[in-house]
Image 1 (cartoon, rainbow, N blue to C red):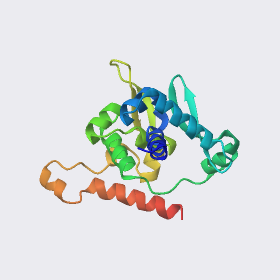
Image 2 (image 1 turned 180 degrees about the vertical axis):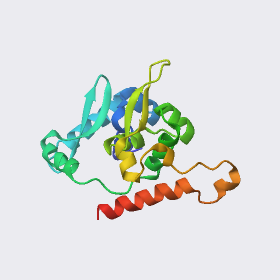
Image 3 (image 1 turned 90 degrees about the vertical axis):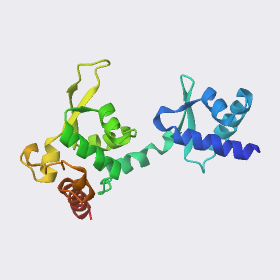
Image 4 (image 1 turned 60 degrees about the horizontal axis):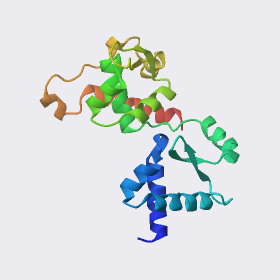
Length: 197
């Protein structure tokens, strides 16, 4: 495999590893190449990113490599954060919101067990939009954070209390039809879109 292809794979792995980052050992294992080759590839990528026409850089912290933005562009990222958020929420965020609304108080792990996939980003999205909040810690190993819906959640949905949430279907037959709670959350997403247009 050519060096450019290996660099592209390493770059993709750095991006895909997100906030958690990736270690040199993990890169060696995944790419099935020796440590010296990985070090060479990372050095080349670092050199490539030093050019002014590139907006990324590789940061190393405690043996973990992270793909991150350049500090000299930080003013632009601040402006991005100040922009009104995209109005529509992802399906993952809506699923997580529905689970939290009906099962609260609930931990992130319990949300993931119900959804069957990692839910870090959807939960973070809901927290940043103030639709959910931390409401304590579960009295179990590691004392995980418990999440519940916020006052903003009630306001957005025009509810005075959680008792006004539509009932969940009791049988699988009802699941085959578009049930009330699905329609309720779809209406919410549509309303948010209109409000931000």
